[in-house]
Length: 109
Image (tube, rainbow, N blue to C red; front, side, top):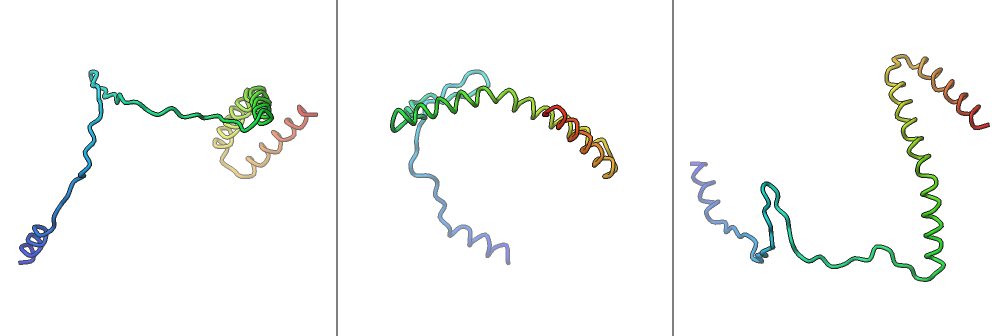
């Protein structure tokens, strides 16, 4: 009985699909499907004045200089994290971190 009530209640609902159908240009190459349509051009960088452009170029130059050092620091931090993961006791981890901090401070000075 319950099944019939549920079944008839579903029959009364009207199901609608999308009414606005858009047909896109698709190219199928072997196993890949490629959409070929025109995309509007987007301007990523726009400056209000020349001073803003100069500030951007200076920042870009500084980032290019520092970026290799950031990658080096990232690699070093990952190595340290792997080393810390192998150490089981908290006390030994603290000693390891303290020794690393001392060696880094010696290199810096």
